[in-house]
Image 1 (tube, rainbow, N blue to C red):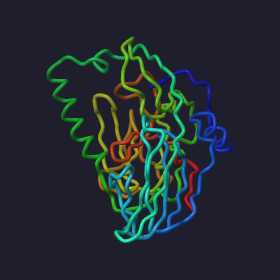
Image 2 (image 1 turned 90 degrees about the horizontal axis):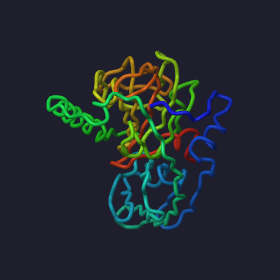
Image 3 (image 1 turned 120 degrees about the vertical axis):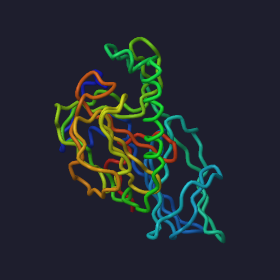
Length: 288
């Protein structure tokens, strides 16, 4: 959805975008090895992502909850929800030895974004048939977000899905839609002309691809491995199909204004194991 954040981006301004748009200027952090070999690089903040490397197959736990396992190359990804606590304990183990790291997360800075002029049935739907359609779509989307492709494409970093845009909505901001408070915005809104090509920011398997959804219009989900799934909303065209392999930089869709939108833009979202992440936290992040 469009807002009024006065920021544009072009390829030679990526550093400025990362610093201004989402508070991601903090450097990646490396952690020395002890016990089980472990290296961790990332952005340690609410909504942030970190990429680690250890021995292949090692189990990865956050606050003693097992969430993923290292790939055949030893790579793993972890994500921190928008509302994650300030301290999280990371433990990596192969059943015999382990590495334990206390992680301290920077708090996110979230504003209130007010958006008016939306079709009311996209804010407070009441029609029983429409509610049944929304429930059915939600079940299909949940399957897409639950995808667990055996790949580790996250390790090579992400590029922007649009080559030029205006940032019109920040990750994490509280939303007031047609005067009614709503859930926080779990995406990054990127205003661009209708039909602008949307590029895959990293290699992936297509986990979901549909058009005509009530809230999202055209929607694509890409699984980059270990449950790290990115989503692309309000698309006017969908150029890929579920199960298809895509390469970084490949056109996958076109910007639209479908579903709950006030103008043409791309809403870019990301989830990991039901945690809502800021997709900008992976742009330019390359694991050692």
